[in-house]
Structure formats: structure tokens, C-alpha cells
Length: 163
Image (cartoon, rainbow, N blue to C red; front, side, top):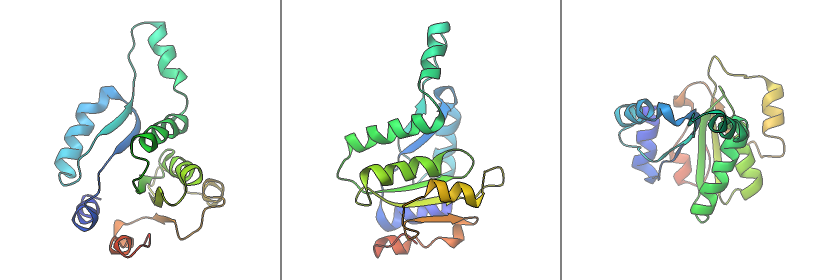
């Protein structure tokens, strides 16, 4: 993945935004990982707030909802911050990245969420039923499920395609 991100940075000079459902207590570790492994593609890291100051803090964390609800809310924030930008959703199949990026495509259209790339990881739910549900109504030319980053063609982005 670092080579893919570096190539994307060289080709299209994107503004990277990292969105994760992990609690902010992992920020230092994730920040160091990104700055070490993805040094050419650093950017803000959006993480869930888990501040345990008693029952109220725990309830607030739980009120943020599921990982998908959290990510959808942050996607709405990103859209409000940068409505005129175009995005590529790059995630994996271990959690709710596919559903979150499909949500963005459906809500804001291809003018905003241009492409969705989902890395099929071993621990992920990689069933056909999941993909049919997640990408219902989204053209197959928009999303790519891949096992190896070498399967992607970043140059296609420059030419206006997703892969």
C-alpha cells in the first residue's frame, strides 16, 4: 500500500484524509505509522473520541453509534468542509469502509466520491452477499475489490477512470 499511495501522490497530488473508527487513544501509534510507512501521503486523521470521565463519557462514546454511523457522520463533515473536491475512497474489507464509501457515493454522487477501492483482507467479510448489498445501485465501474494493490491502475485516475 505505501507504494500505491506514493504513486497516487506523484500522479494527482491528493489531499489525504484518514478516517478510522478507532478511538483517539491510538492516535500516536497511527500517526507514527502513517508518517513512517506513508511519508509522502500524510494528512489529518479523524478518529472516534473515547474520553472516559465516568459514565457520561462512556455513554457519549457509545452514542456516536456503530463504526458505519460514525464514518458516515465524518463523511458528511468532510463534504461540508470541502464540497467542491473529488474523493477516492480507499479502504479495506475488515470493517465498514465499503459501506461508508458507498454511502458517500449515494449521498453526494460521483462528482464528489469518484471511485471506491476496497482491499480484500483475510479477516474481512468478503462474501458476494456483502458486496451486492453494499454496492447496490452503484456502477461496477466505480468500485474495485482487490487483493493486491498491483491490481489497481492509478494512471486511470488521470484519464478519468477508476481503475
